[in-house]
Image (cartoon, rainbow, N blue to C red; front, side):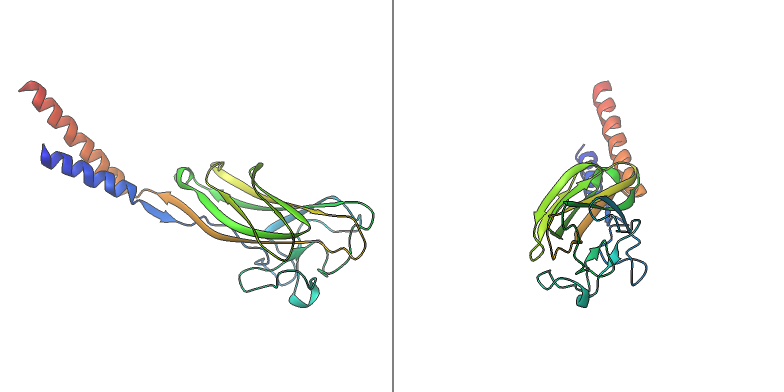
Length: 212
């Protein structure tokens, strides 16, 4: 019986140390497929200056962003509704800009999926995973955190950053976001086999004791 319990313990240990990977498709802002636009993020202008383009935001270089903004880095860059990040927007009405990132989670990855990150915006930002709030932030000179350990779905998931730009003159707007960590635990096939084998041994042992 001790050998059986040992086998089961090893199986459970293997299951708890199942293969852990990262969630593919969680891109930091400014890591788009071109030097001018970030094709990983979809931009939707909900309200604000009517001349703004849509589809994908612009990647702003260090020389074209507001001086008080966190400086761009190799990890992430500011993305903005206009090619020039320091362009003044929304002189009379509040601007609301949606930046959406899509990524895929498989059935096997679903139970163990989670991520953490940080964000900054001019002026206010709320982060959502599949419509569920996962963080809020204020300001463009410091970071605010966001995180999700639930709320994922099998298949296509969305992370949306909703940026509010307060009305006024000399008024740029932009978003900066970095995913600091992401984990999804996927048990290897041999792990399942070990667990099932241990359970089978326990069942056999129980039957023998009953028959004795």
